[in-house]
Length: 322
Image 1: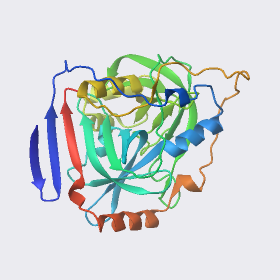
Image 2: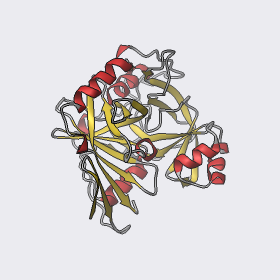
Image 3: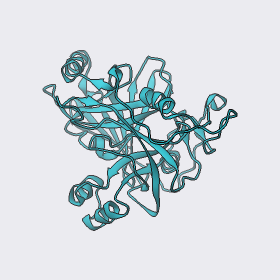
């Protein structure tokens, strides 16, 4: 391990490990409590609402410099674990990150672990609340499968504040060869700021991490993903839709890295309930009060937190070869 002090207030830890690292068993508590039956759009939205994270980049002078999305995927004691895209937290040498949870609480990010081969990152933060993480589903996805997407688009309201969006759609393609981890294409409506957001199956389990919008400029997409512009252009033009990184990829790389977080992992596709098939179809959701963020109030909360803690708590871990 190499520990480098960038300043008195910020540290960056670099770790290296072999690509042949032993697979670490991921703890999966409470599997019997996971409901694997197909649900209505409204029911899935309730699950998503409680587990979608708003990630904010803040400056030293107390401004919000940008935002992204994430999912609460594990909780161990008073430590919460979220997954997002690497490009969401790429400014860790310049900004300090906080996470806003569904109960409107603001949590300073204590650690960031960014993968180098896939556009993925893990964030951890202290949380004493009784949060329930979202289960991770690892079965084989297929085109035509119904999925839902949740995230926090930037400038999603007329006053420039944030409002979580929840949209329905379907998987449109599965790429033979992933690009920076991206492999699942889908038709859901997305926007900037929803990167790192949830792609959920018909039972409300996380199956993919959203991060690439096909309508984005290929030059910007290439810079964001760290690939050649020709590769980004091919990805953007593949189906005309959006892309995510499968949960199976995330779990495999996490296991190689030795991340033994207590994920709840399920292995079967959504099941038809005993009462019979559930009619889903297109689902239109109007954000409620818990899905809207008042910028003035959020800024005040962020500043109050950073007035009482050491901003140097933020640690970035780059894992080479994961």
